Image 1 (cartoon, one colour):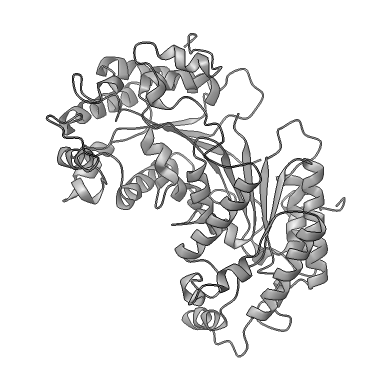
Image 2 (spheres, each protein chain N blue to C red):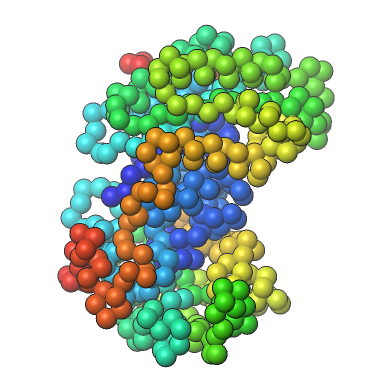
Length: 247
Length: 247
């Protein structure tokens, strides 16, 4: 009945319904309008994401496709070779190709679906060190660097340009604010409540610009103040809802 | 692909994805397992909810029914006759009948669906007065009382007993804690972050007892640590996922 947004990504998406999360905030913003569906996979890079595509965005189905999707990978792809998290590393050229494969698959699912690419957030290397130190692991060298995340972000934006898609340059956006390192990042990589608010705001802006403005979209079922308490059927009939006469 | 929980109720459900909300917390708890679908309708009472049933829980459809639903009405039904919010009032006997109609409709949708009845929360009358005062309205007499909410809660629990359904006695549960009036209620009726946490905990307890324990339910797709970086296909094949060979 309702349109769907799908949030497709890694842990920063999976955690987006935690306290203050950007996914939950979107679900709240569109609470009577859109179902916000969580498809976040902690630790996944763009290579592993490809295996999920036929399941999350099935082709040859009669079910309605989502009207919009966020594609938010890269934070794990950018893990450095030869460092602690190298198993998640994906070379930047392959990352770019994988993003294109994801977008093309979504296009095949639905040409009209809004596809929004989100770059990985910046990395606070000292935050990462502190995170690992807290679990008893001493990093000689960081497993991720902000510079490398920036390279992946740049390539993500290039894909968006090449494929004429809206994008969110989270890597740059967050670094515009003084103190971004701890204001927006809880462990040098994942988001604080304030970091989540940045993502919510940016996604909402892009969605609104693309025709999904919550103040202009229809809500399902009449607002309660439009229901005549002496004749409630009326309000529901006006919205093309059959009365619950059969019940 | 994934099972669904539907949260069906009034504003306390509609707002359940706001900051710290119980619905968002459930979506987070079951983030790789279940889609938590929001069907909250601010201001609705159980009478108006009946009009929504054929749309939210359609019969004669081939789509999979939700595996569980929360039914959370009563806070508006309990608005007092002859007071500010009397248009939302539903007599308690009718409230009880309406709950039964809702449950019977859900049974028809799916006999195996878990149906959980939640009572309205307690009312803090002074909190309601303060809320209206802040918007320039002076209440001579409260539009809701805690005593009346308790009568509706009792009747909700009776329906659960009569129909052999699990229930959550939120009205009593909250009042066990000293300072519940402002600890759990933001305006004498709606929930604070701590009040939301009570609902999340109770729903999780009931769902877990009924077979939806998040630590025992399967997660979709392998955890990233189970993916062999040199042979990722393997992990996905083991989960009966076809490889994304065609992409």
